Structure formats: structure tokens, C-alpha cells
Length: 125
Image 1 (cartoon, helix red, strand yellow):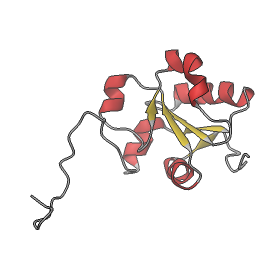
Image 2: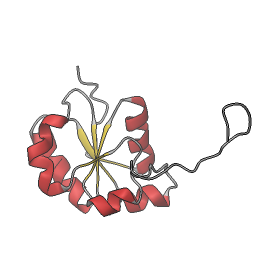
Image 3: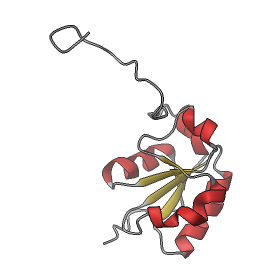
Image 4: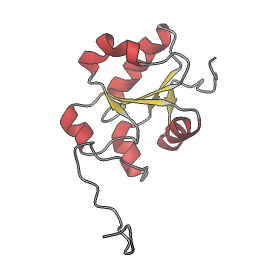
């Protein structure tokens, strides 16, 4: 059951964030693993462009797909291909450069240790 709410092939960072947050959008990051590890869209999956063809079965056609690269160039091309295959896909205009520039949230790599706020008390340190 497709929502049909991602009509545009390109979304600004705020619109893309909204799709990921409210429509269970699947964020696909085409950058290399090192770039991805430096920060990515929360919940995003790293799928370097050369691996995308082999990993399409990981994407649901029932949920929107938000594709991002470093500057928005590669993701636009990939979105066209995904749409031809029946995915509801859109790229992030300006890529991760725009995402960071608009102060959108970033998620660190899974192997990074979280150093967030800690509180004192029975469960805190």
C-alpha cells in the first residue's frame, strides 16, 4: 500500500527528514563507508552506489525511499532508476552537504560509542 506522498524526485533536507520521520521513509546513503561513518541520516543504511543493484531486495516498494549522496548529483541519477523499477523515491537536494548545512540531525556510525548526557542517580553513573 503506497502512500504516494513523495511525488517530487528531489526534496529539500527538511522535507526528506519529514518523510523519514513520518512516513517510515527508507534513507539510503550512497557515500562510501568512511563518509557514512562521519555522520548520516538517522536510521539510514549505507549502500555504496556500486552495491545498490545487488541490494535492491532490501528496499520495500511499499515505503518511500530517500536517497542521499555527498552533494546530490549521484542520488538524482539513482532515484530515476529506482522510480523506473516502481519505487517511490526522492533524492535529497544538495546531498549531505545541504543536510549538514541545514543542521539536520546526524547519527554516528554504529561502532562509535555514545557520549551523551548522563544523569546521576541509581541508574546513572
